[in-house]
Image 1: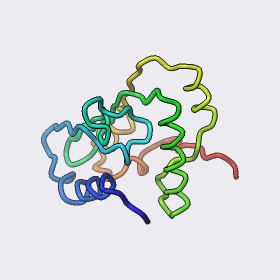
Image 2: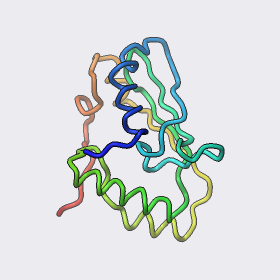
Image 3: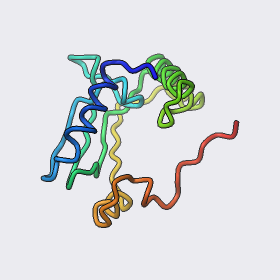
Length: 142
């Protein structure tokens, strides 16, 4: 795999620090490299306007300002496809419909991912959301 600095920093954080975030904690300013749908920060374009919320060493919520620049999003999807081709199972596919929608305009938008699945994860002491999610994401037919 070809990892950039953002991916390396994120992997180190996940391996070294994440499990020790017992008290409710917000981590902010995630690298753009690992945040393919999040808007770049106005001051530092290497990071995004994104946060994750942790309790008990587990991610409970993920929120960010949505990327609404079609050209930037298209390039990030291409980067994700390259990462997937290099063996990254978590990388995204190229969503042409989404890029087309962005080309027609998307106002400033934000999203927050927190739900029953993340709470069940906390209450059942599960280490990954994949252990408790009822309906896994559908992948496109190849």
